[in-house]
Image 1 (cartoon, rainbow, N blue to C red):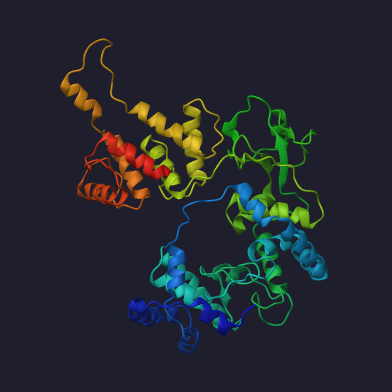
Image 2: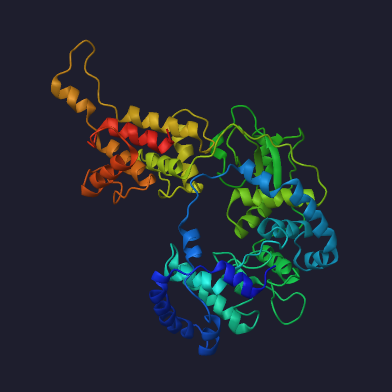
Length: 483
């Protein structure tokens, strides 16, 4: 790992234009820190040499346009190389891992897997100075209030003497050490397992970091001796409304015809199994138990919890799972994900917002749409689903046809070609996803929406006149798809 000084130099990229405002912010934030119990001496030492970090701001603002599918994520983080390295680390640190496991009742292979996923067994702990990163985010970030709270906790860590500002290195978002604790988690859950008087998650010795992770999982409800879940087979005509629909005893799932994928009966002793389909009805079906949800408290992403669970199994010597993934399905881009949320919202399904993050609310909205349109309600977002939603909306908002054989009047023809408020809302969603500011999605062609349309026309090579028309809507749809 790079020394503190070198790492800080490499990670810090200051924007001179923001420097005066940032320095003023540091001075004003001192009052908040003092009220939290930070002395003037600690504060000044923590901020010595700290500058606005433009790289942190860039990473905070960047939202990757294309997400990866879960099978690609697992292929990267549960690779043969990471499994092999994990087995070596498991053996090298076995005595200490067992000692930690016996105190906190969390399996050593789980701790090793978290270590492997979070920092590739300590080889990628982050090189950003945490005080600088959090101060930059607190001054100018999407979650400035969160960053300010984390910065206070980071300063309290320095006050307590666990490390120094120069040695407190981590990710651009302030996650630190071998298992990437944010300052607030460190404050409440980090432990001094080796007894040297410091909760040191930053050193090359991973002991305190691994023990802190064990304490985190134990306090989050880890159940000793219980697996993370089971790969299962669902019966024909299964009620997919039960996907992520709550926890049930294994006996209840068995009564519905659910069996182990290997062909055996479900183990009857577990009482809190939840069904998930991480890749929809065409991927593996998993009955997950309490410990899977405990891992989610460490990082609330199904892909993460599954990666930790599978990597732990392989480190412990178990064979690979025979999951079959729908690898012909491509991941939706950020623009398409926002488009999907916007269209579902337009149709009355609550996605919880239009942010491109297809979490539990969005997947519930997808299932509701699928159920109401005679589709398998598996909640899986796909390009095929997006097209189905677009078609359903077009049918819903299509003009009422005239009586067959009766010619249309010129007024009726004109009306049939005019965008409805629903069409304008869709335009606003698409324009927003493409980066043009409509100042909201309200179905009204106000000045900001018309300005956004003009910007789109000028930047896209669209051949129309910029009129608010169905032709323009079609062009926006093509642009969102990347056609």
